[in-house]
Length: 285
Image (cartoon, rainbow, N blue to C red; front, side, top):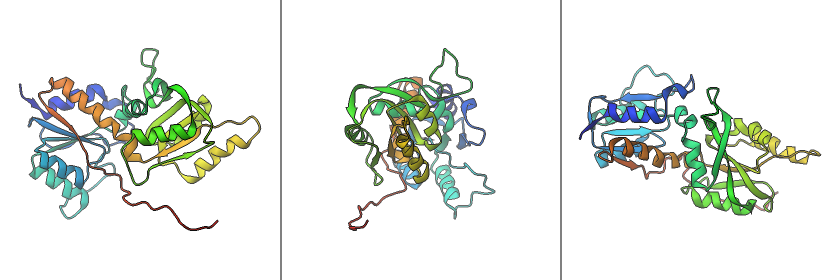
């Protein structure tokens, strides 16, 4: 039985309903013919030169990406510009591009469910529930809150996260007492410092997310210095690494919908923009 781009999109939009997407987002089919036959798909976090090359090398007819290619408006796609070049390569290679972004963040299971599963959490609630969440869909929303099988010190938990995620130059950084007991954990795939307040309000032991900025993290840590104050320990991960586990989840969606007649490949190209890391050897301060 053959399947089309439209068939695969239908399955993806059942799993990640477009109506969940934020108003500012740019999701859906970016380029390609919905009626084209699909035998192989590639799932990735970023539609980049690297992942497009991987798709064309594999003879893929559809790329499913998490991050949008056209998030901000463009007035053309000339081949001498980065986004235009990708569009031309895709069209000439007979490969469509579909993006599922904030709708995949909010859906159940979604991006943060995949992150939680990867680091060994049993999910129990959303970090920030979606306005349409009900008693029947309590996990609907951004981020997830879960529990470890057993309490462990923060230093070991940071190691757990580092061992679970793909390697990046950014690595995994922790902010907190190394001996602090960790059991309840909030996670948010991608950039999550806007949910620091929600993590504090829920009283979790640790919060794992990406792109934590200096001032929000420092102000968050200062809460613990106030009498009676308590703030989760922080684990800062690379944005790409925190969302990459979702690729395997989306691959399962495609395989289930097509009874594995469509090959679903998870991209193995690291598209984190940071590619070098050196520890400072300066004795100061």
